[in-house]
Length: 225
Image 1 (cartoon, rainbow, N blue to C red):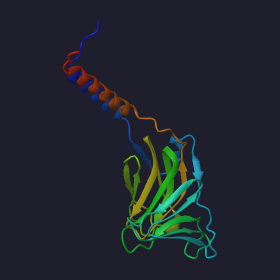
Image 2 (cartoon, helix red, strand yellow; image 1 turned 90 degrees about the horizontal axis):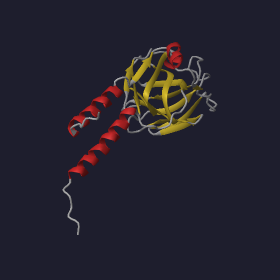
Image 3 (cartoon, one colour; image 1 turned 90 degrees about the vertical axis):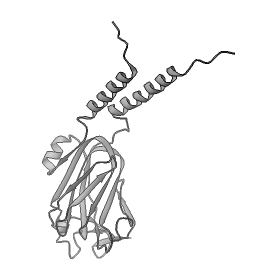
């Protein structure tokens, strides 16, 4: 037997369902590669290549600058800081012989920053990062999630790891730090996903259609001519 439901009660029930769907959504962080890789069965790896400069580094410019490797765009933004953007290789005199890193550094204004733009949205991402003085690094994702993590302070040795999985896809990750030097390498990310709305998004769309229908049902009848 079907029961007639009050429109307001129906809307409230849908809102409650939307909240239930969203209860398990969100970003999960991982502090080591082993735990992250256990949660991500398949992923793509991208290592920063050696620089082409004869002095052991490539200088991409100061303020706003960019470079692309393997279909991934890396960029710094003058609106965030006026530092220089480098690829620093293992032969550079100050690198201690470790693998190449992308480095935002030497800013006199603002913060060190590197924006990573992936070719398509993903739900899992990881990288190695570090700073010179062990400052915190903030990770801001295009889906609105933000996390801040301490760094080990090993400069170009990159002993800090940060990995995430998320129910909500993202395609950009912005790293910022007050440290004078911010470095990264060894990116990993899962397969691209299509931009399919989350279940809660479908619920909100349904609410909109229901509201339109109820509004139309309450309009006064027009007299036929």
